[in-house]
Image 1 (cartoon, rainbow, N blue to C red):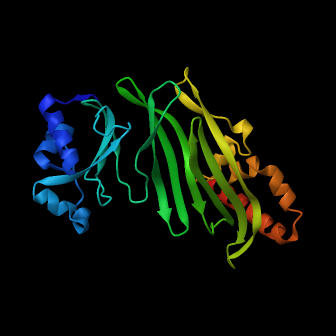
Image 2 (image 1 turned 135 degrees about the vertical axis):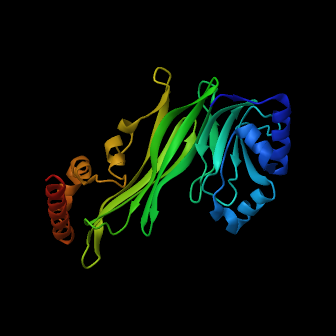
Image 3 (image 1 turned 180 degrees about the vertical axis):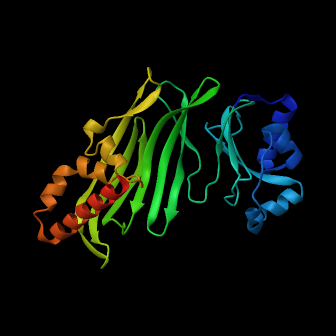
Amino acid sequence: MNRQLSTADFKSLKQAITAKRIRVNAAKRIFGEFTVDSNCNSNGLFDSVKRGYVYLQAYHFIRNKNKFDEFAVGVADRGHCEGAMIYYFRGNKIIAKQDGYSRFESEPEYFTNVDGENIVYRQYQFAEGSGVGWFNYFFYKYDGDKLIPVLNELANGNAQGSWIGRVIWLNATVKRTNPLTIKMVYYNQFVNKDKIEFGPNVINDSTMVSYRWDEKSKTLIGQYQKSKISKAQILSYYLEDNDLLFINVFNRPLKVALNNKENRSLILSYLRNVKVYQDTVGR
């Protein structure tokens, strides 16, 4: 976005941030058109729109919260409502907006990059359900009057009791920001999907992944060669049809696990299921 606020509107916004709510007509003037889902009624938000205002939530990317330099504003974000948006500012200019629906997602956080510019990040949800979860970390960097994407990394890949016979779990947590370092805890196990019998973990480990800033590409690059997990192995924890990728990138531990009597039948059953599925979708 490239939306410059007038001096009067910027003053009104700062006052609204302090009050944590804004009049609908002022919000439309400042942010442009926006909608609030009627499902927010249970939290009082839809009623608040009828009364002429919506809630605001501010996120400051600087220690001094009174200095409105780099910050974000969630509009109608209280109560985790569909249609809520997060607007990112540099001074009195809106430079980006993002879907702010955040039932299970994280709020924007930030750290200062090695070049002195701020990087903001939050988790974004792709799938949820009983025994299912998929979240990614998205990192964006202030770059002049733009907010540019610099890293997309799995935050949680979780599928318990997979129909094809494999249970996966990877959970990533930001541990440090100078340099950015993410801890990943992950495992794989196999299950008899008919009897719901779980075998021992075939892969069960954790590692730290650090990321360095690359000025040429303007991205954070993972130093996977210095950790116990590769980028391809991380991708195998995405909740997509990734079994062939998993078999390839975890080939060695799979072969070792076949020597375990408790795992052998489960793994062979899993490999047969994968083959049947691939033969079916390949027709």
